[in-house]
Image 1 (cartoon, rainbow, N blue to C red):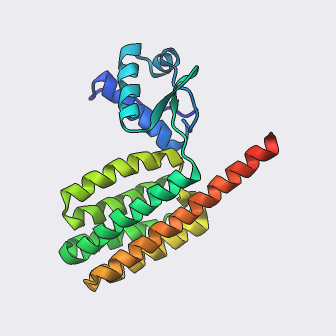
Image 2: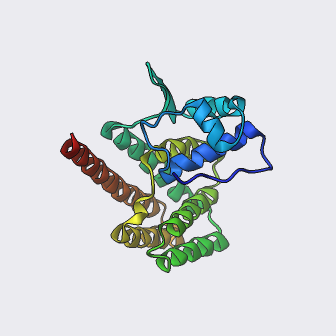
Length: 226
């Protein structure tokens, strides 16, 4: 398992939370994995108290649950929950795109275009693509200028971490994502609010389709092993 690095700038509880969150994002900790305080404390090189704090915070985020006779474990999502998540993501990010079409500055639009161009040059490097994609969506949300929308999306994005590594690991998906971003950008530059919302909703729907296919493939693999 690949471990995240400690930070000397954070209290131990917050640092443990950040590191465990990073491991969930990377797929090092996957749904169903048990979170044993003693094991985590030893692995992270800290006492059990900050580990307990981190687990409580992950539980508050909805990323960890307590299972009878098992204890704390990374939460699993079923296909229905994944669909609900992506439906809400489509609504929220579509709204962000619509608001950005009205409010974004030329500088912000140029920055979005630059990030997407970097993505187009980064095929084959999933970690870099993930970070650039995160930057694109974060920059778009900033351009929407709505703090309540930003808070709603922040909570949703934490739950999406349970889905594991980025779909941009697939070359075809990465290329399609860049094209979909470009469609959003065209609408943003035209100040076409409905067009920007529609293009972003289509982008999210495409990602949802990939996630559902991944779920089917994992389920089929489990059936073959049983």
